[in-house]
Image (cartoon, rainbow, N blue to C red):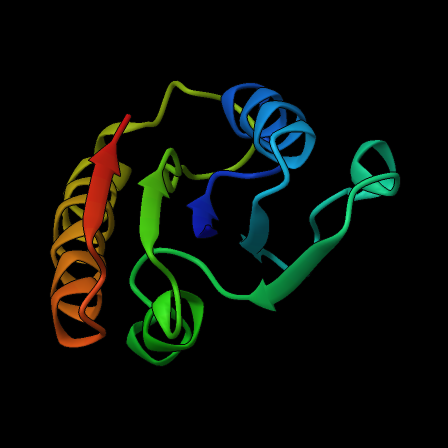
Length: 116
């Protein structure tokens, strides 16, 4: 199966990659320009540069995939705590970005969408 994964470089995404690679699935994953990919070097992954809120890269990520596993999250900086000025941006990117990803999956006839 061809599986698209958001949040691939995070803890949950890394564990998904290990399990799905071992099962023989083909993986297509988002990465940001600043993503550290060293710990994922042993795995065969088709990397797509993109992130939530980037509609073009959402279409590219899901194209040709059977399943999308959405484990990604946009946040400001490296901390999960955002100041008050980030709250609207956080909600806009995560909620609308997820909806864009769902729409892209529907348009690409993806069979299953898993939201972690």
